[in-house]
Image (cartoon, helix red, strand yellow):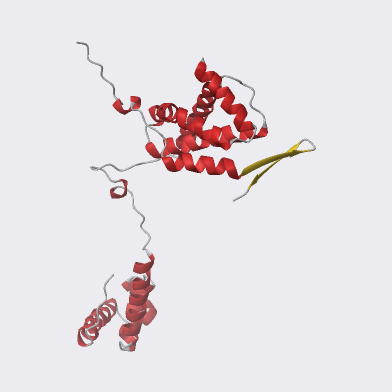
Amino acid sequence: MEQIYSSTPDSCKLVSASEESVRFLLDYSKSLSIVSSRGMTFESNLN
Amino acid sequence: MELQFDDSALVRDYISGDERALEILINRHNQRITSFIYSKVLDRDATEDIFQDTFIKVIKTLKKGNYSEEGKFLPWVMRIAHNLIIDHFRKNKRLPKFEGGEDFNIFSVIGDDQLNVERQLIKDQIDTDLGMLIDELPDDQREVLIMRIYKDMSFKDISEATGVSINTALGRMRYALINLRKIIQKNKIVLTN
């Protein structure tokens, strides 16, 4: 059977972002407020 | 097809203010996006950073109402991740990073020749102690020692400056060192760094 050789065997590894990263993004999304006024956009982060 | 429809519905819900929709979108595509990033950067920490930066851009774009690719959420996110991966490599090219392995430590090759704070304090203390010991020497010996060690003068220059022969200057230096050792031994002083 044909063998597949790769110099970087890890490159096809399935990985997921950590729960902390996901939690951070969800908290960031909840805290981020974007308001547009007179053609200008204002970002505010309510921590 | 169904998945794409679901994505676009979730994007609409999120834009309308449903934060739960974002959680579903992230969890749904987490493995695919993270694996894609990891396959390029091959570094777990960098992967986490790029994943976060990708979704920060996604969140900002959606909240600003700038998203217009309905039904193509995943390819859009993948494109953002791809651009951030390119940025990552550009940044690393400007700031080369060296990492030590089990058999190689970069600090064995390069080092900082500056003393750390503790060693600098010890050195300052030794210099002060040594100055006090030198003050105990007879004037003629102290004079020669200071000229030779602190002023880096040659014995020829010292002999001219003090008006004695080179041999006398050499002899005073020799006795200065012998006497310093005697004072150190007598008082059991430890001078180390």
